[in-house]
Length: 353
Ligand code: AMP
Image (tube, rainbow, N blue to C red; front, side):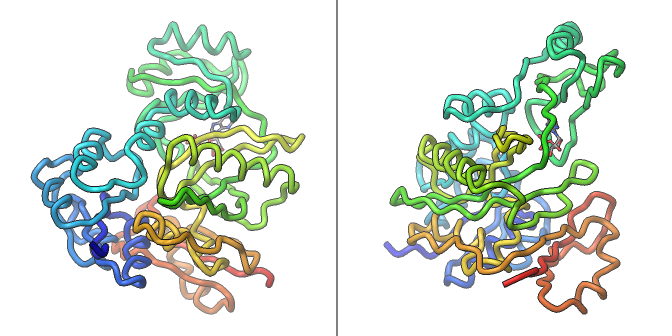
């Protein structure tokens, strides 16, 4: 049977960009998302308006699609597994499982032979006090689940920072204390694996965050060839171990000696890969669609250097200036209301050829 319809769970900007890439290759897309007129549904063929774990909606999605993918990592694993009984679900649900809980994620990454920050699980204030003591009063406390863009985190820079009440402050939920990594820069790699097991990696991007949210991604990153190769090898190892299909984003801390510490992985297209739509022939979005549709992966080489910048909240007011710039690709997400911290769009400027 020829594949015609791709289901996408989640209706945000990542789903929107996947639907646009799919349309260019003649695939229809159906978005499962509770919010009406979401960014993805504006450009897709149709939307099922329901919760991500609504059994009737999932049944409909399975019946109407040839393959189902997702645009965010907090899709309930049970929903993905139920779907996978009747329709291929890519990336595989076990990738979701590995990415949803920071403890499971770190253990998995370490099992792949890739270093992470040291960590302790924290399930009480007493656990936190003991964990901080072990790390000399320094560390980053994070919720194990549902954290994003620096939310659900607390940084302890020295033993002078009080931890009193911090466990309750983060919601008295399962936490993890990570050792504080004195990194030189943050990089990420976007990579893809096809149904035939082939792997394509984009060049690592150097990322700058502001208030916990990605601000810019610059390519090439100021790292050595050896560090770039290490990032590629780590991505290949993770993709192969998971029997992965689709695009993954993996974030790393690069230390002064060039070594890498993995921070987290996202089993989906990634904000730090948006630059690929301007600086590569095949964007991460088309690459993901190719992978889940069983097509050959495309060329991930970069034809230009570039800087991608997120337009967050009122950054959108500078749009008239961005439109005047030569070699800048503007991409807007169809969100009518701007709020502080809300991703409204992004711009990618080619800086060299
Ligand atoms: P995350 O939500 O894990 O991506 O963390 C958000 C940001 O916090 C990262 O991009 C880093 O800038 C910083 N951060 C997270 N974990 C650590 C750590 N263990 N050591 C130092 N900085 C960190």
